[in-house]
Image (cartoon, rainbow, N blue to C red; front, side, top):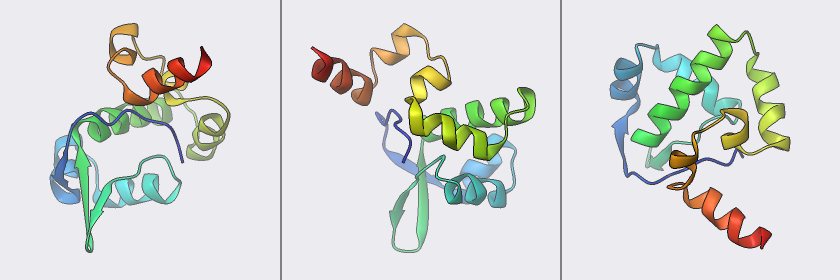
Length: 107
């Protein structure tokens, strides 16, 4: 599973997230199936957070703007955390619980 920041509650169902991103819900399911995003689950419903939405925008940009395949992104995330793959700004990394935990563990 990719490392990613999760600071906001998961409140958007898949249809709302897809509308916000101007994507088809099937695209979000494909990203989930590939292990690139892991929405919260409550019963049969998927819920996305604002962080998930930002990450999906980044994924979409890498896939469609950068020409990187979904499979390639999955492999990259296996070897490097998301903040290195997506080149997050230091300010954003400073708010990421996973980044902060990894920084503490490295000391």
